[in-house]
Image (cartoon, rainbow, N blue to C red; front, side, top):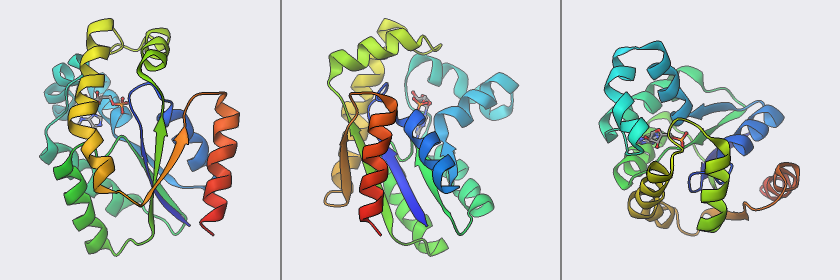
Length: 184
Ligand code: AMP
C-alpha cells in the first residue's frame, strides 16, 4: 500500500509519472488539474468558475480545491492507497490535507518531489502545447509555483523523496519504483 503525494513544477512530468505509478500499484490517482480541465470541458458549475483561472495559470481558490480532494478521498480510497498529483499547491491546502488524513486515519504518507531546471521546463511546456501552455502563462505558472507551492515542499521537509525529473520517462519511472521499494 502506498499513500503518495507527487510534487514538481509545471512540465516536470508529474502527471505522467503519477499515472504510471498508479497503474503499477492500482492506486487511486487524483490529478486536480485533470479534474478541473474535465469540469471545464463539461461546462459544469465548477468548470465555469475555474475556466478563466486555469487558462490564465493562476490557482483555483483553496476552499474549492480542498472540498474536491476531501470528497474524492472519502469516496475512492482502497486498501491499495492513492496518489495525489497537483495537490496540495499552497500551505492552507497542505494544512487542510493533514487534517483530512487525520480524520480518515491515513498514515505513512510519502512525498515524491520531481525537479528540473527552468529552461528545460519551458522547453517541455512549449512542446506540450496544452491550452495553458502559452509563453506568458508558462511564466506565470512557474512564478506561482515558486511563490505558493515551493513553501509546501518545506512543509513536508524531511519526508520528501527527491528525484531528478530530467531523462527518459521509463528511466525516471524505474528510479521512482526503486525508491518506493526501499519504503518497504
Ligand atoms: P496541472 O495539471 O497540475 O498543471 O494543473 C493545471 C491548472 O489547474 C493549474 O495551473 C491551476 O490553475 C489548476 N490547479 C490544479 N491543481 C490545483 C490546486 N491544487 N490548487 C489550485 N489550482 C489548481
